[in-house]
Length: 299
Image (cartoon, rainbow, N blue to C red; front, side):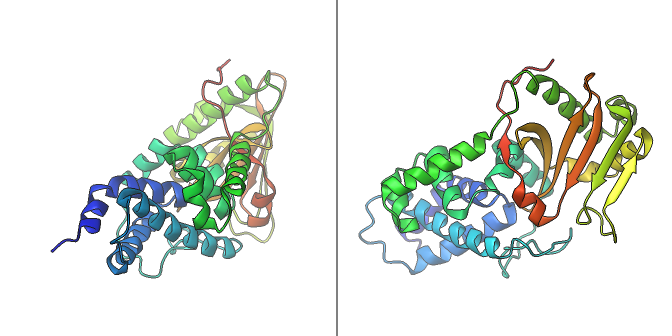
């Protein structure tokens, strides 16, 4: 016989999965978190739970927080595509549908997921639960062993980091237009459209974590740079525009983690003169990432 709390879990599964996905940014880990939460619910004494739906949200959030803390400890470990993502539970047995992953990422916003990955586990939990799911600070506080005022500060700090520090406003429309066109050309495999965005002497630099090589990559010229961009079409599906140190750039997400960030420099005509491809964990940690504000006008 299904217990009332387990029935409530099933009734709210979609919302609980949404919480887990925003906390973790990975469909596989979100499914793992729900499985773990389900087991915890089955073992818990819920006779005095007054708000089952709210209590279930805190159970899932606590599981996700533990996963984030484990992930944070393994941040510097290398990860190759096709391997088990760092932080994923050893019991992961679910097959993730790439289409479902893509739809979920689109519904949340890849740029937001990118920036959420730069927050500390406590900041991420405070921001996601309060700002995205309207959970009161006094209900979040016990999860973090802090008082509500401290949790409010965590959410506020996370909110500032999500917004980022924009470049001078006059530059943002041009940067937005160019990087949007770059991403569209890369996703669509439109070589000519990509070439049209590049300065004749464009330079691309990529660290050794992008492609395993003895030395960092240094490529000069329109055609070699464009061909390199075309080779990243698969990754571009999980890329989006973000603020990178206050300028419009791109970031690519894999298994809920920021794996590659592109920084662009332009000439006076708006052509791309330099592309810096960052993938080494220590370099990624130094970047200040933010969400590009909705409604940035395109020049």
